[in-house]
Image 1 (cartoon, helix red, strand yellow):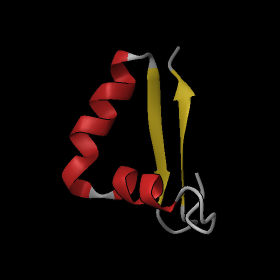
Image 2 (cartoon, helix red, strand yellow):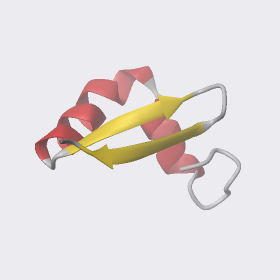
Image 3 (cartoon, rainbow, N blue to C red):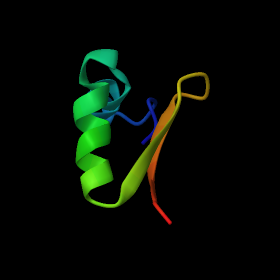
Image 4 (tube, rainbow, N blue to C red):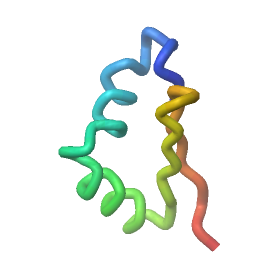
Length: 50
């Protein structure tokens, strides 16, 4: 997800917000994914865990 895409702004802000980090990370961990965030480049994404 990219911060500059107007269709994903709400999702991007939720994933990047520190208040929701544990919930978001826990959800994706339970699905077998890891969340990667890069606030400087303003993107976030998920990658399958090994």
